[in-house]
Image 1 (cartoon, rainbow, N blue to C red):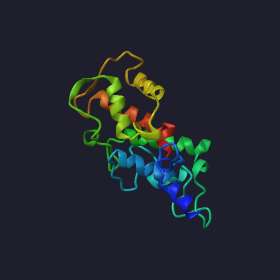
Image 2: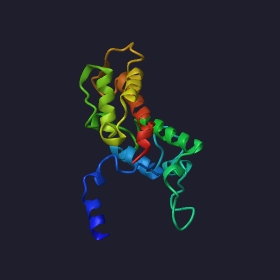
Image 3: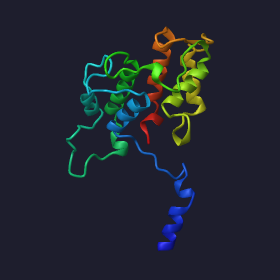
Image 4: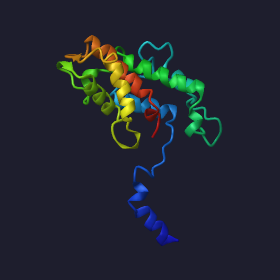
Length: 194
């Protein structure tokens, strides 16, 4: 038995992407990962123009901090996703992406994957930059080509725009399209998973 376990744990297949289990992030994991990927430093207060403070948002997602349902803790995995808690996750993603003031603000200029300085960037390139910033570009949780096409359609207004103005973080395209892409990418199922 010892040799069998040693062989399993030392095999490349055991550590492959296909072998890793995927599980739904807890509300705290989802919020912290989103804030980390976007270099947001918060103080636990409101996120953008959300009427609720961050702990209230996490509670609405199904995790009452410091109040586990029993001594075993929270059930986790798919128990985190219900019709109500999923809406709260989507709402958090929208508020976080739109936050451009206060302590939870996203400074687009501080994001290393989103390149500012050009007034003519193809929407597909902007999608690639946002997806990379959120870590949804590689591995088993990478967005599919179809998902990226949908994001490109959003960014280009269904083909009406051939380029976006990313000359600085205050252009209309950065404030609407880039922040909108961040929100949509955070709302993807892959962003909800480990």
